[in-house]
Amino acid sequence: MKISVVIPVYNGSKSIEELTTAVLAELSAYTVELILVNDGSKDDSESVCEKIAAANKKIKFISLRKNFGEHNAVMCGLHYSTGDYVVIIDDDFQNPPSEIIKLVTEAQKGFDVVYSRYTKKKHHLFRNIGSSFTNMVATFLLDKPKSLYLSSFKAIHQDIVKEILKYNGPSPYVDGLILRATNNFSTVLVEHTKRDKGRSNYTFRKLFSLYLNMFLGFSVKPLRIFTIVGFLSFCLGFTLSIVFAIEKLCHPEIAVGWTSSVIITLTFSGVQLIFLGMIGEYVGKMLINQNKTPQWVVKKEILNDK
Image 1 (cartoon, rainbow, N blue to C red):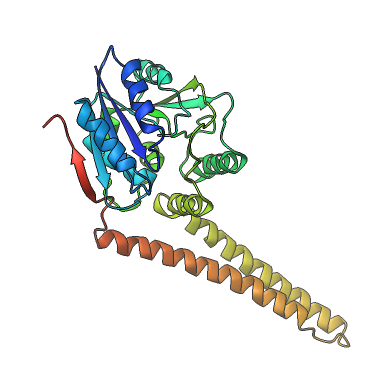
Image 2 (image 1 turned 180 degrees about the vertical axis):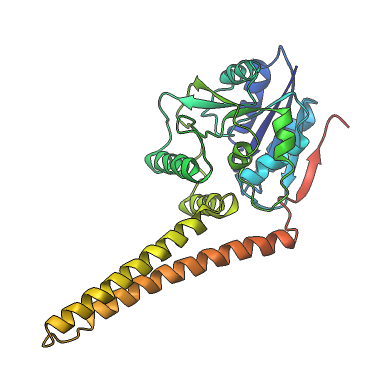
């Protein structure tokens, strides 16, 4: 059995060398390859990763020309993976490498994907709230089982990796691709440690971009939601028009107010603008796909198997 470990790296120069050393030590009894993907880091992660890969033939290194995003970097790493099972782990050392074997052992029972699950997450409050919201949205939009927690630390069978890589759009969402390829999941309880070096690279802008990708890239339910909202708005407007007409007939002395008109106009105009913006996002994604925007662009690579 061969295990591939994909590590997307972004500003992880302080932790990546220690992490790769620990992963290789924990998997010393297995045939293993590490795939480091530098996602346009602003620190010296590229030179550190290059040095690590040059010193060990079990390590592949791919450096991207700019920051394409975590999921794009993971897709790049999956493209270079050759193991029977592929484990994805972050570069921040919050998932101990000793837990990798737990995921792979569970996957060997016949599961396509094994997600990690934590007794207590050591992320900061903002990140925990974001993760909870991501899982809630995925349950609604992508038909994710409620009991399944979508963590970044997971093991994937190579057959599913091949299915994931069939997607060539510019905005991949790895968990969305997994959910549409299989429903044969399992979870394993693992340890989650506090981050000692650096800080989280997930900003509000990146999380918002991820949510938009989930909303618009892998589901048409948002369009259906606004179809329902539009129908309900029509029903409300029709009902109010009858009520106002009856009220005017019964009480002709009532002056026609502008407040209600302004509120109704702003409310329904807002709904229409949101709906038009959503349609624009869908059309924009179609345009980007038609233009063959790449998922990633490689700047440098060290492939020790060639």
